[in-house]
Image 1 (cartoon, rainbow, N blue to C red):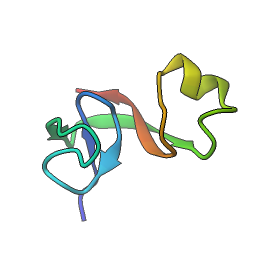
Image 2 (image 1 turned 90 degrees about the vertical axis):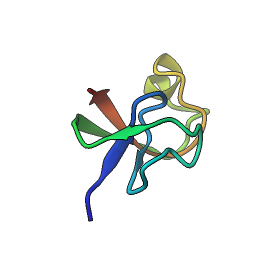
Image 3 (image 1 turned 180 degrees about the vertical axis):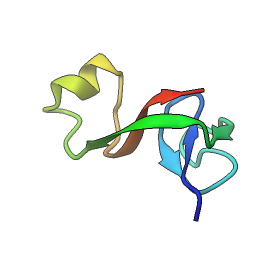
Length: 60
């Protein structure tokens, strides 16, 4: 099981393409951010995250 992050929206997934935006994924990512309630999260607003889930802070 290799976790990958989307190069567009930074969502973490195991798939080759992001299930949310369809972007390509990369295994070269760092920093894990878990968003539970994006409406109340200041960090989610700053990073333009609209859906709950796991996100990478940096994707290369």
